[in-house]
Amino acid sequence: MKWQKQLLDLINKSQDKKIALGVDVSTDEYPIETIRQIIELFEQVRAETPLVLADFKLREVTDTKQAKNITFHTHGRASYTEALEWGQENGIETFFYITDVTGYFWDELKIDYEVIWLIPDKFKPQVPFGKTLNLV
Image (cartoon, rainbow, N blue to C red):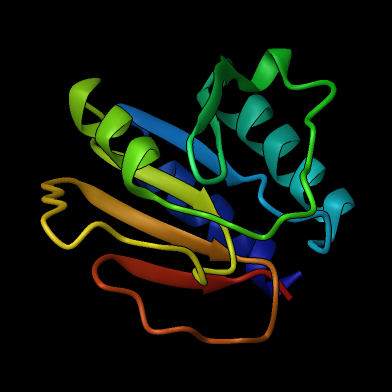
């Protein structure tokens, strides 16, 4: 329950900010039930949070209320560029991103908002910017 409390605290600290939740759908090896619980938590605390589904491209932008049937792929190829650019273009101030952070970052990517990487594993990857929270 430790990470749940930490995540809830981070969401609550973002109450006055425009936020979004991203999900890396490039693999189905994540704990899918945990991801569904995270989406439900966002919906309960910040109803209709924008939900960005991406792998090597932007797949869908919806909201947490509409997130019933997320399709996870098996190819394992991920790029964070389009999802993070979407955040930039839409004035997002805090972007929560569920991923293992093993995907590609475009070198010239410039992000001027807070990114919190929600990692569904014990693995602690080095991130190019932002903070990490392991979901285990």
